[in-house]
Length: 365
Ligand code: ATP
Image 1 (tube, rainbow, N blue to C red):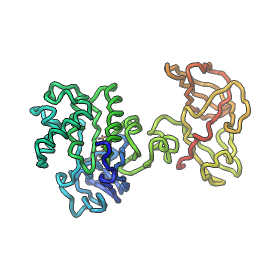
Image 2: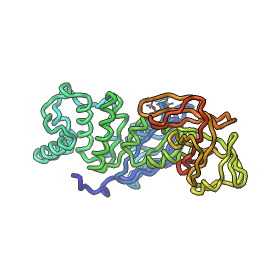
Image 3: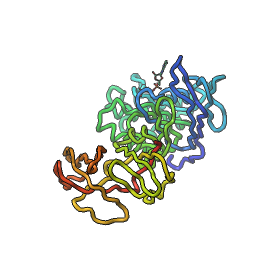
Image 4: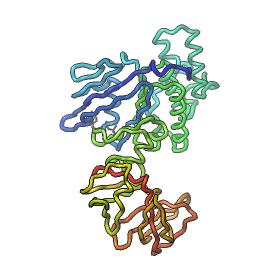
């Protein structure tokens, strides 16, 4: 089945989609295009509108504004909504929702029976799908005889075997323990690589979104903050919200004055940020990741990095790395720096810090 054409999968478009409950705009003018075969995560804090968006795509909630189109056809609008069962989508919930009184094979076969496939092809499809989700030997077990991870695999198999036009997943791993959750992220991506269903995945866990997704849509208060591939989102967050939500970061506020950018008690040449279109004046804010700053006993010279003298004010040893806090000399700015375990410095040391300028992204001030 891995050779399935991605062109057979559906394109989804959300166009100015809104859902207002009383005075709360759960989803507020949300627009995005999801390409056939693409895996998109909706990522954001609790209450940002992820589930409402997913339920509108599934057809359980009718929008109060905007439209959803699937392959160009309007399936949701305030005027009307195609019922969920007519959308040819599959949805997976955190609770698995597999039938306890059916065996694994019967659970997976159920959707095929509804669609009137003949017995021989049901048997072949179910077995192939169970092999793909690595449950080949457990076809005759009942859900109560399975682990949480195995039950989630049954839910995945059942959703995928009908070859949905769109696969929807609502926090599907949140009931699993931490180790299994981590393993299942890779499993979900592996299955996507095998089948390429157009997928929308709701999560508040950025690690999960990073591992599984082609692109991540970060939502905040019903709005789309940024939609980007994981690497670009991490290295080039556009807003303070995204910079802070995706990993840890330092927000460095400066003011551009001609060729220089002045920060609190140090400055950097504007020319080193050629990759970005910076104005020649005005305020600017950079997101600098803790591992994009390095600490040195000597200043040295390098075109890539600009050294700033700083004092080490705090440190914590976390086993895999050191968490340092440094402050440029005379400055109130405090910067988090991640360093390898062998880079040992003491509180009070005067050091030189260097920014990896390639990794410094200007965000909306
Ligand atoms: P979580 O991660 O906690 O599930 P979420 O991002 O999925 O959150 P939604 O469940 O979509 O968020 O809710 C978005 C907002 O809409 C919240 O402020 C919520 O309180 C509100 N909301 C959701 N459903 C309803 C409803 N049926 N009636 C009124 N308000 C609602």
